[in-house]
Image 1 (cartoon, rainbow, N blue to C red):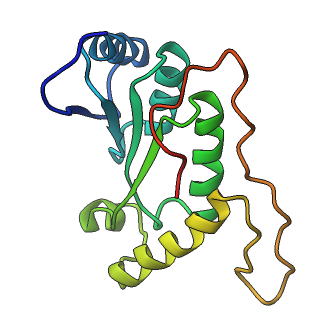
Image 2: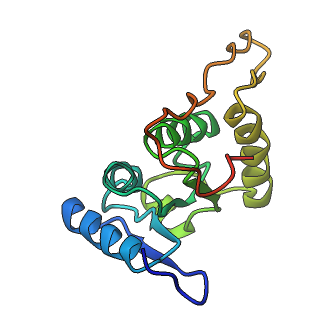
Length: 166
């Protein structure tokens, strides 16, 4: 793998042929690009599908999901998604959370309210869930037991490229 003078990441929208984007990610990895980010592009395609395919076909490049938001993806779903992605590409996944785009959310009939509060609350929920901790989200039902802890890397896994999710 080539080594670049500066750390560089490649950001792409979730559009176009998934297999072609995987080839771009493989080329980026060969050129020494540190990470590839697939952004949520409303009314186009799901970024996690692209990242899953990239994770299976690359060995070291970091995988960035972002910016995802708590309006279209509940924090529990975000933690579940990142746990599964980390299983495919151990220690290479990063989640970026954002507030979403007001116009796109309104086009989906999703209320756009206190963005700072909503994103902060999502971060406070995703962090413990990503560590495998149980979390009480409502007082009308008991919390789920620990279930999201990623499996340990297998002996055939590449060495970690980055620390685990905080």
